[in-house]
Length: 337
DNA sequence: CTGTCTGA
DNA sequence: TCAGACAGG
Image 1 (cartoon, rainbow, N blue to C red):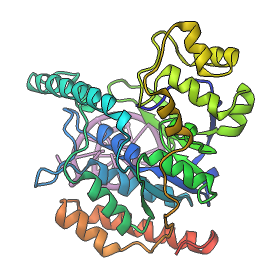
Image 2 (tube, rainbow, N blue to C red):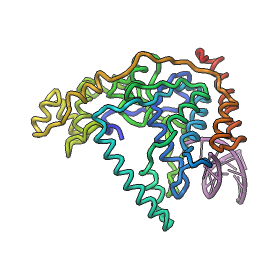
Image 3 (cartoon, rainbow, N blue to C red):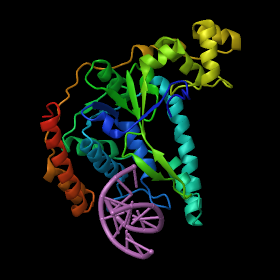
Image 4 (cartoon, chains in turn green, brown, orange):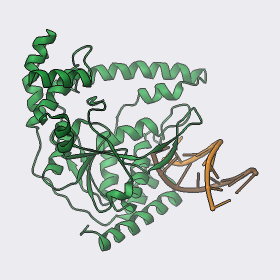
């Protein structure tokens, strides 16, 4: 998923509390996918309501976002629109990889195998009403939900460039290519986290990556960064075999742009001009409204508990925390609603 | 992932 | 009180 920029960019570890008062444009699809993949039982089955609808993502959004608000963060959720045409090839490829993983999951599950979870996660795919349900929940919780015309990361980056958000929240680096001034990764409750399977604990912190200072350090432009990404591979092209982030950087710095690099390696990239433009002149809309509302407490409870079988005690508790935290934010931070 | 319960 | 195990839907 996304572009592998490796360690080209410096990642600064920060505490969640350092984002207090900041607006973060969260890549909702990316986050949803993360929840869908991770929130599962040991045999790999996701959380499911009595109608057979997946609810892992709803659980994730409810609890995590409440925690973010308690930290004083003001989240905006940006959803994907229609994917660009050049993405179709990779989307199809991912689909077949998932289908294969799904078969292996069934096999492992049948024999109670240890690798069931791994294959289940690899088979994760968004289906049914998952996106609609997530939008509905987030809106009821009072967050701005923005519909991107095309790529959510592009729209989120645009919002941040406009100064309407401090950063884009995503696990992928793609937002940098779209010009996001800052990307925040691991936007979750920080602290010790156990790796499933082994008894290993890792101290997970948020990571901040800054575009301008990163480019300055590498002594390249954003156009050149996009060229590096094209060599390494993006969601729209497979990249050149044998070229990783470091080699790509060297080649682009040597030749100035991708044309020379392709000449040296005797390769080419189909639809190169279009993909470049996709990153540099992305399909985004200035027509978005960022407005926080008071959480619709009873509607959230009704939606999650009546429609999706969540426990009323748990949801009520979370919603109370959310209400309190957003009122707190209202008083001590800038205007929320 | 996150909240909750438990056993020292 | 606080890791660690476990369940959530």
